Length: 168
Image (cartoon, rainbow, N blue to C red; front, side, top):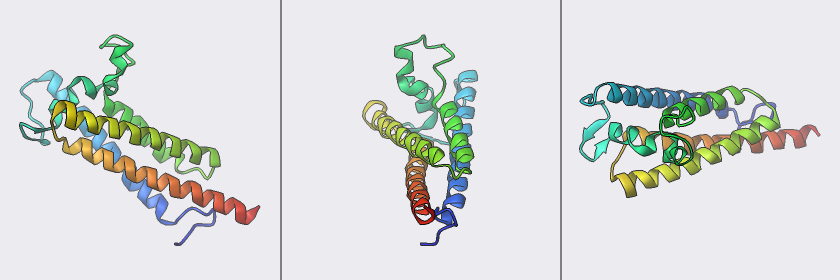
């Protein structure tokens, strides 16, 4: 494997950029679908392919905001109960920005936040299949992006640790 001078794999920067941009595009699209559906209940999104393959049904469900959990603690219309897509926009923006740092603290945060996103993805995938009985192309795509970002972040962290060993 080819590494940069800091020990990070050379492919990592490009992979991070591509994954974060894809995650941002998916999250912005999800937010667009949710807002459009709220304004017009008859709105049909491009990702609504069939009765049981409907992203707008998922995005506008209870689990489309705050993972369906926040409203257990605050009112449904609370500013704390944001759409999952807004959380995704924040997550992918942080991943992209912090990925530019060679700091070991940033690497630890990237890995930790990726584990949280993967846990959220597994939870939401379970809700998708077991509760909603739906298949959401956009959702599954973001789950795959989150798993790929976790892999990328783990490789980055290991690379930075190896780079410190070589220079230390």
